[in-house]
Image (tube, rainbow, N blue to C red; front, top):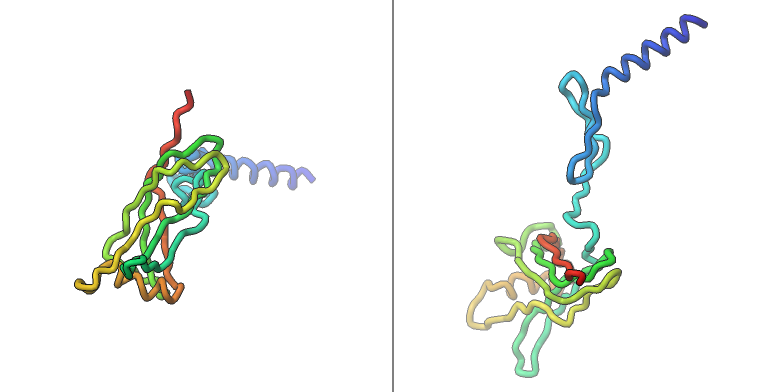
Length: 168
C-alpha cells in the first residue's frame, strides 16, 4: 500500500514538473509551455477573423437590363451577432470554380456601408455589378459566368475590417 501511494506521489510530482506554464494567446489559443523548452497547443485557433460577424449567404445572379446589357450581381450577406450596430464592413472574396481553382488572379476587394442592426442580417439592396463588355474578351464577367450559370461558384469571403456605430 505504501508503495502504491509513493508511486502515485512520484507520478504527480513528475507531471507537475513537466507543465511549466499555460498561456493564452490573443487569438484564443491556449499553449502548454513545458520546462524542457517544448510546447503543446491545447486548443485549435479560431480561423474566423471576427466571429461576431458571419457570412450567412450571398446575392449572386446573372442579370440582363431593359437595354439588353448583361451583368452579374454579387454581394455577400452578413449576420451581426453583437449588440452594436455595424455601419461598415470591408472584405475580400476569392472566387473559385467547381475544382477549387481561383477564377481571378487576385481576390476581389469590397465593402458595404449598410447599417446592420444588433442580431440582424444584411440585405442585398446594394451590390456589386460585373458588367459584360461585348467588345473585350476575358473580363471578370466572362471569367465568372460559367460558374454562375452552372451554380458551382465558390466564394470565400474574408472579413478585413468591421466598423461599429459609436454610442452617444
